[in-house]
Length: 69
Image 1 (spheres, rainbow, N blue to C red):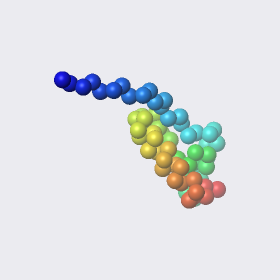
Image 2 (cartoon, helix red, strand yellow):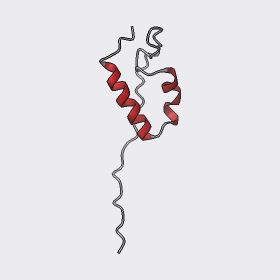
Image 3 (cartoon, helix red, strand yellow):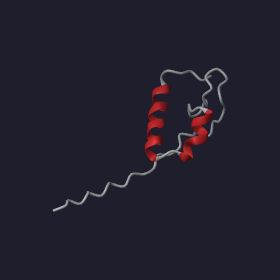
């Protein structure tokens, strides 16, 4: 007898980390609002939900280590 896979619980797609403070730091090459690179900003909508979650984890790790000002 074959078991049916349990349906995955619906997970909401990750929200964009954009905070409407869009300026790239010349020193770090990161947006001072969301701490993403230009490439990460441009590719956000093409990423899978898993890719977005991974990027959000990377951004979280940047928060304590980089000064974008």
